[in-house]
Image (cartoon, rainbow over all chains, first blue to last red; front, side):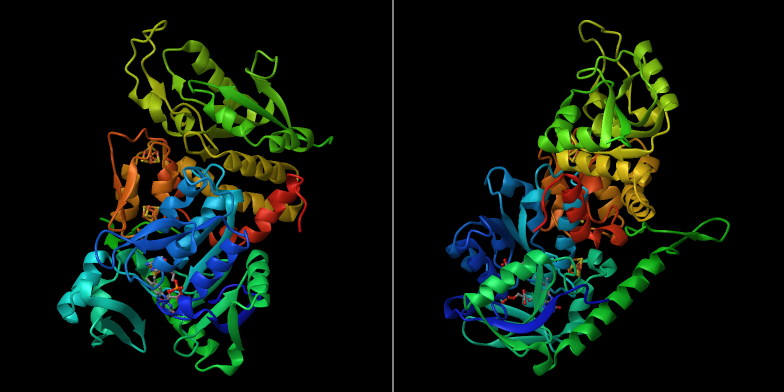
Length: 292
Length: 257
Ligand SMILES: Cc1cc2nc3c(=O)[nH]c(=O)nc-3n(C[C@H](O)[C@H](O)[C@H](O)COP(=O)(O)OP(=O)(O)OC[C@H]3O[C@@H](n4cnc5c(N)ncnc54)[C@H](O)[C@@H]3O)c2cc1C
Ligand code: SF4
Ligand code: SF4
Ligand code: SF4
């Protein structure tokens, strides 16, 4: 079950070149929100908008296509999108909220819906939760070190960053490409990621990532009734080209392999925390386990 | 429906905001009272003067230990109720009443307020100021299923309530600092921002992907830590969010698709 429950898995990309021009992969997230906004399925979506420093995302409640477009592309640093989930229903007055998030953020969202202790009126207003795949994330200063010190690129000159095929890649505005082995980036990972047990946003309505599909395409899992409904309408409206996931390379085998690797490694970390310290009698003193 | 459970609202030193939050379920409240629970005690709503026997006591507010009536009533509540729920930040953690130092007209000697868990054993806590209407609704439905449901429903309700019972065991102190002490210091924070959204007084802002807590602003309601996906995350329940949401929707009489 490392890939979670899903009704469908496909390879897909947006049919809108205006979206694909700056999307990270197949433009699934931006296309699906833009469609849902047009159709009134959502009143707005919380996305990672541009922030005060280069490549520092700032969560925004996007209520227009232009705002969705401005938030395209992956920023490999934390965008606390859940911070706006209540505000979206209050100051912004949205009744049908969309949100994109990493697996952990979608976990926070579902917990907020089932245990809405500090989330008055939020649970019933979530209309579309899109999850992205995520192996790890980096604090901003970690990303800065990777880009500026290891890749020798100024943050403001980078136009795209990507992780894939064992490398961290930075593309510059002058067309240069700097790459480092992913191995060098591990020490900059956010520590909280090392106990994360979800790779493909198992709890989203629709989740998507690049792994499994050819360049420029995305792997998409349609998971819930809500996700299925929106996805079917978007397909009918011609928003996406799709290919059966069985017919693309490397396909779900690679997704399963990476998910298994991530979860196995992090499960070990969770277990190791149980005997991290030492009591006087020689028995183990534990760090806290969030899953107990 | 004959097989309803009995519920009381016990009012200690609180602002009635928690009761209002229960009422904010609007027609959901009527549904609860029609089908699942008889309200046998509630000073603001029911003409009963003494704490009766009941299945579930929802206790709002902290206890002033200089107020004999309050102390007597909270002890009585423990004796008469099968399940005691600390409803809201004041009952769970003291919340805003932690800041009291007495001297207030017309009982200036009332200066020491304790979360109910410092005086009686508490089974379930619902942190927050107030706890969201839907959190109270979900807890009422789960309490009903726990006491009157099928075996399968009982198991689900027990699993749902377990983390809220564990929070009760964790203690009677809460603060925004819990995010530092029990999440960030423990190497568990991943910067989702859920805590910032949950704070009723906006004491939490996110800076470079981590919560920054304005500790003077914090009223100690406990919402942020309870809401954090890295305080507790019970996969057995939360993975079933879709079916549980449908179940609660059906219990509230909302038609499916
Ligand atoms: C930290 C991180 C790690 C990832 N790791 C993997 C991986 O291991 N394997 C894999 O296949 N895919 C991974 N992805 C997902 C991938 O990079 C793309 O984001 C995804 O395929 C969506 O592309 P798209 O073209 O459909 O979306 P686009 O149309 O380009 O839209 C992307 C959306 O994601 C939002 N977003 C961007 N950065 C963040 C962020 N940091 N936090 C939250 N939301 C954000 C944007 O606001 C935008 O709405 C990762 C993404 C992130 C943020
Ligand atoms: S690895 Fe897990 S905890 Fe870290 S950002 Fe990704 S989903 Fe969140
Ligand atoms: S809710 Fe928890 S994990 Fe998320 S940012 Fe706050 S402290 Fe960190
Ligand atoms: S920081 Fe906010 S949510 Fe957390 S305990 Fe204090 S007042 Fe409550």
